[in-house]
Length: 183
Length: 384
Image (cartoon, rainbow over all chains, first blue to last red):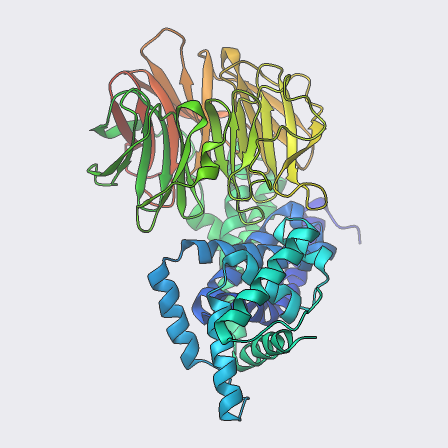
């Protein structure tokens, strides 16, 4: 049976929707976790991820480019998080820190270790948005510097300097030295 | 790996593991609904404007009942002025943001935030204020001598860093990027192009790399989520810009004039990126729509001598002006075809700029330069 143009269009649309739904299911939780470790706020993280998913998968041009969807999405999530951070006032940032203290992972059973991680988590949340994004992409996502530079729209040198500054700041916050890490 | 690096890694991973995202099925439902709604309007516009049976059929299959809910009002609804608000002298530029409507008044040297109820919320001094754009939780304003300031839209405090003062001449246009860039672009009459949120290492103004700053006369900059575009209205040339991460941090890098030799041109040329298309207006009220997907160009004569463009409430809008005349018109344009839809609205008081307050849903706002007012506009039936 020969399908009409309309039927072909319908079928293509159904296939596309299924593909997008499958991408949504694959990316939703990992992207939420990425946004969460940048923002330290579950509600805000899910909001940013939903916005990024809808934008990324609503334009025809992007849907045609499904192979690059993860890269698009990661950039949209990170930039969404950075915008969110910029919007927050100092007061609301402090509130996030307070909330984050209550959400510290239960997996560190040693009280000293738990306390150190709680302090580190709070210190990460106080980093400027670009340093925070660089730290998360490097230490949590394990991305190479070139890929981080692409996501943050800056040079590799800037990524290195942002990581260096972030480590120095985190070290000072916790009274630790960097130990000459070479990144 | 140092102690700090180990601790950072462990901290991030343990916190990520402890966090459980919300219910996936519920999130997927929300996602599908949002996505359908975003896409439905494109189909609805195409169907309503062309009446093509195949498009209608696909639209109905794709969007089902959502098309019926979101179908665009097409036809003869008339626009009307709901309200006018007095503002400081010579309002030249206007932009809608979360806290209200930002207005730049050149002669008074003030930036004013007007609430949606028509009350003045706050005023700020800025000599020669002539440009304003809101986005990314900030409003950015340009004044004389390349002076640029930003206002925090949450606290309403002025953010005034030294870097913002480095535009080399009068700011001619500004634009705020979307999710992909999150940048605030500014161009001035001396060919300076700067991403204000990500300036170069020495905070220098940069012409797009590879192009002679002496020859570049940018008249407009526009962005959407993916692209930033720069228009040299005098030459009728369009440049696509990117921040090149491998070469110069934050510098505007040109990828060359886009091959649009018949681009409308003129010193009052305007540029808009919306609905997967680039829109350019030039002298004589000519408008070009360049489809970014198909490469198709369509031309519309809007009348008048020049036209400013804006988008919102699912339409593209043009404020058409007339040299030496007091009047101007607000025109509604189909974003898919570039055709004028419905009746135009004529305004007096030398209309000079237009913004659409889609986020705040308060309507269309236009500055009336000689009347020292801003006008709020909507359809007569109250539906935008």
